[in-house]
Length: 211
Image (cartoon, rainbow, N blue to C red; front, side, top):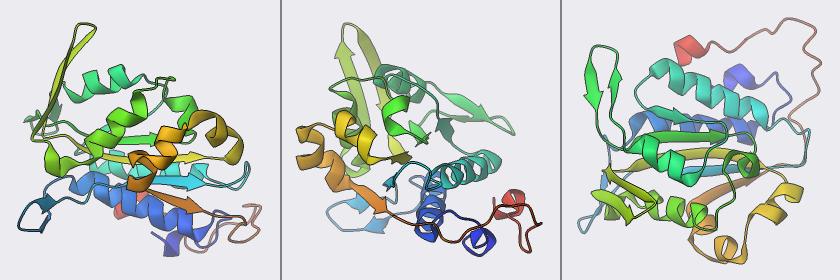
């Protein structure tokens, strides 16, 4: 994946972590490290952080396309409320071949985190809680306004933001609390190279083959 993106302007670290997120999303909870007291699953949260115009969108798009082609997990993108995300996670779906999946597995992708999740003080706290697959065989809400039950929730998340948006979106509890502690925050301040993309690439990405 990295070799096929070296000709682009996007920082290589963004490509690397986008690739890891896509692998994490496809693997889900099918492999783990046995830590004896618990199983450590490979779901990760990744947030790309850079100034506007530094090509954060391509690795998000790349990861989404690869996971979509593999077609073995839910992809959640676009603007959503945390309640909408929970509802989708609690709904069973069918994979090609008629395989019904009733586990709450998903890949949450957003090229701008603050624009994708409707402002809700509980949103990042819930996502922080869901990160810990090791503690949740099931996860449920019995609130009158939102009743759902998630079976074996395994969430991978790949998002992007910049300083202007993050200062408004993240609260003290997110920065000093669990969300930042659980998230790989990948920062870049310059492009990989300058490329106007007028000349054909020597080694263009082949997402179908990568998937």
